[in-house]
Image (tube, rainbow, N blue to C red):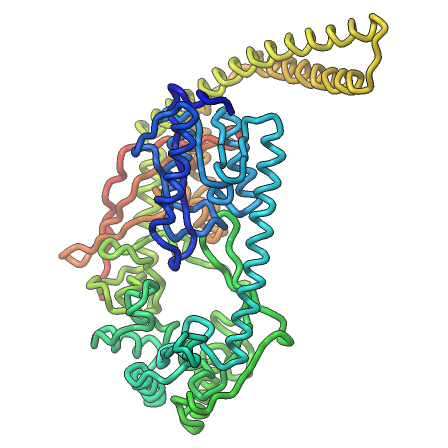
Length: 564
């Protein structure tokens, strides 16, 4: 790089560190090194052009600072000409993610420069060096994961804590002869243990998982992890169920049962069961919170309750125990409580099924106790949708939006045709130059290989141009009002015959796939969402073109009677 490379250019800086144990000053140190390079190369440092992420892993691109940087680069809102970082591993330690970033930056012509590793994506071999560094970063993650697992196994074998602990336990440091921590010993937490014993006792008294969770929420009993950054907003039935099955409470600790893997491109982690031969079990009677008799009694009741709800008198499965059961309620997962935003779920009634707020029912944290009949919700919302999708105004709106979209496709095709023709002209000129080179008596294997590639590209561009011209001569027809009405009928038939598929079709129509149900003082509900009607009527060709539809004005409130 020459001394004035950044003169007159806007240069962004990206800095990141991954662990909560690292110093905040790490960001400042990285920014300082990047600033020194920018100034040395004739540029000017701008504080507003610094993007950073603290305590964020490089295994995912889901980071606020990095996402803001890429958005600014891609939409050109800050006119960024280059990006400087301490090393490319700060951008990503995932090989696939790094490749995606490289392609995006290369496409728009914004180089990425690493200060300490010497990477420059604009250099002649920038792609190679960037790829090698990204691969090294990916391998580093694999090695780090292996070393971490090895260390955790060592802690486990030494009887120390390996991380998160169930309610009823906490850890205390184990010190060596020089008062240095060598691990953490697991001990019983008196306050948490009392809650655990009460859970088991309440269950033996006949209370359900849900009833115990509601009672604890009413009494404001702190839930597990209440004092950590992973705190939950309240007790739920699944938490009680997990506690009643946790053998740690009788001193039997199981380790290495699951392997946690990050979902590619995200920070979410999902468990993957390990083979039973890899499980590690250890007995710790000193950690026992629940006595053997109580544990056995609870285990017996769990079996009996499960049998009651999953088997009939003959032992055959019933209810939710039947595998592959599909929903019969097309709005399940779509309608949400307007008070707290939680999903509304189906609950049984004497003569009908009802939707209720899940947080009000399971946690008791929402004040919305109003239930509403499922058949009323389905009928009233579908009627309102039908009206919105088939009224003269709606049909006119849809035809207008489809016409606009087809116009955009046509303009895009014309622009592509111009670009293809220009590229074909350049390719023909390069082919002719190489033919003349060979005709003059010169010979080169590299030239012949290049000529072969250019001729293949020339044929491909010519075929693409022919297809675009032919497509341009095909008349474009708007769907008639009758065709739009037929598609509305098709949607209704899908919902009636296949509620599971119908639910997915409906989800696409509403903003974020949700309908908010607002309880009213008179015991009714109003449903609210932003409607995207074009998505109900897009043809397969429009879907392939990436049509996102347009949004009409906010849908009117839908009245639904409901009583407790």
